[in-house]
Amino acid sequence: MNWIFEPWPWYIGGPMIAFVLMALLFVGKSFGMSSNLRTICAICGAGKSTSFFNYDWKSQRWNLIVVLGAVVGGWLGSHLLSNTTAVTISEKTITKLQGLGIQSAGNSYLPEELFAMEALQNPLVLLSLALGGFLVGFGARYAGGCTSGHAISGLSNLQLVSLYAVIGFFVGGLLMNHFLLPYFL
Image 1 (cartoon, one colour):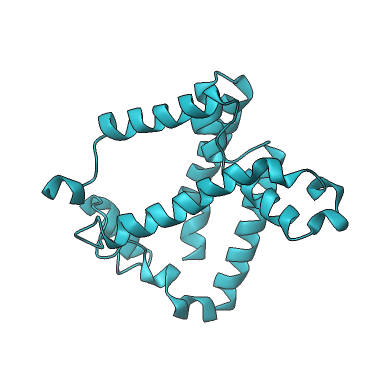
Image 2: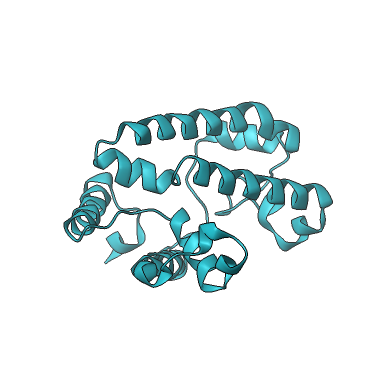
């Protein structure tokens, strides 16, 4: 029973993801999380002011189950199927993060210096969250989907545009992590 509380290896998780993608492909659907925001906005009536949200959102209700599953699955995984709150990362990474002022690196799942409620009192944190959220949302719409949609669903369907998008996501993430993030911390 101890195996439940340990991270599952790639040869278990990978086929599970492939099974879900094959099932979605079989019923003519594609996987992605950013399209759910559009559906939620349409449900809330955003279609009255913007034509982008004026569509038959009821045909996308199935996709909202994916969001519910991600939230419930994340909660179950972190509260019931985990025996620790820390993520195993290398000592070199811990040292580098501590040098950037993140003293909780390696001791908690999320760095408390960035994700604690007290951090939200800092105007710079609020500004960076708002700007980052806008850029991620804009980028996902501009790219025609988010990282999960392109990297998991698009690449498995051999879509060349998804390969370009994933390369762009990784380059952007590397640039942010190595060049911009140290200035924010």
